[in-house]
Amino acid sequence: MSLYKAGIVILALVLSGCGFQMRGVATVPPEMARTYIEASDRHSLFYRELRDRLRRSGINVVDSPIGATATFTIYSDETGQRVLSVSARNVPREFEVYYSVYYGVATPDKVILLQREQTLTRDYIWDETLVLGKEKEEQLLREAVVDDLIRVILIQLSSL
Image (cartoon, one colour):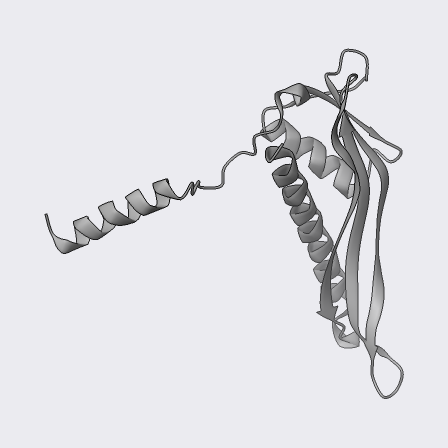
């Protein structure tokens, strides 16, 4: 056996021994097999992406709480931007895009995930000569923040 092959075998043994697993589809508690998402805004970016990601994780997202085995409640879902810095002429130069959600998960019998809040941010430099490009950049950052928020929530659910 060559030194290269021996190194790969040793690396595989070390990684399997430490509990390392490749990221794949999130595993959620079995109580969430039929989940209803309760939200005041069913058109928000977070709601739509959460629904799609839960479905891709093998969860049957239902349209009614009747017959649902769990309810994912979105108590609040807000996004926006803040000015981080201004130029000497008092023109905004740097902005921060934020997305904040307050949520919890429960079954008819018990609380699976206590109510909690998650907020993630990204910042970007504003250039007044590139207005259209910066608006697109802001939207892409907002989508990336939502993607990260959902990833954090699914990791929380996977650890239950």
